[in-house]
Image (cartoon, rainbow, N blue to C red; front, side, top):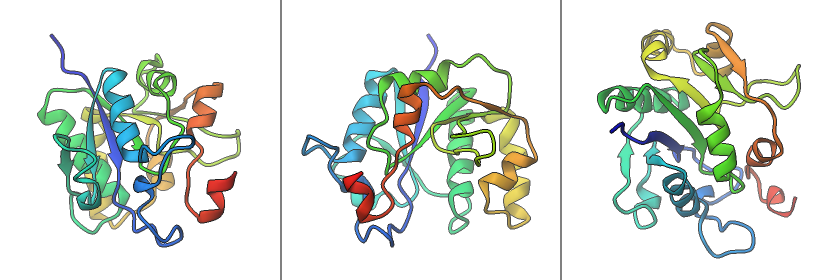
Length: 194
């Protein structure tokens, strides 16, 4: 029996613009915090969720969920991805799907679209338009083929997903209605009323 797919939930941002931890905000129409909903939806969709980054604020909401510190510490979200890729390989998983703790509309359908899209590319990521930047969250990453190039990029001081994506093979995840809705994230208080 194969291990469930890994769902890396990035929780390490400082939330300066929002003014509070974004993953603690409630999903619309419920009192359930975003992180708790993402963990539940991930499990219901056949994923093993892990929290990536400084997860202390979410410990009560995600009991029993593994927490991964950035690798190396203090090197930003690429270091979080590196930690998640290393964990995927250590647990004999070939790939993972990454999402952010500020994405309240991630659904089982969107997670399945990212996991199940047929592609041999190193990364499968959505783009909101042909000339838009890649969306690194709700993206699928090939752990074995990306872990070393990512480690090299981090050692050079790279911090940008876009620069990383420019140096590797990335294929666009089709923008279904579920994927497009899942990409909505909450960065500032005004996003909550969209």
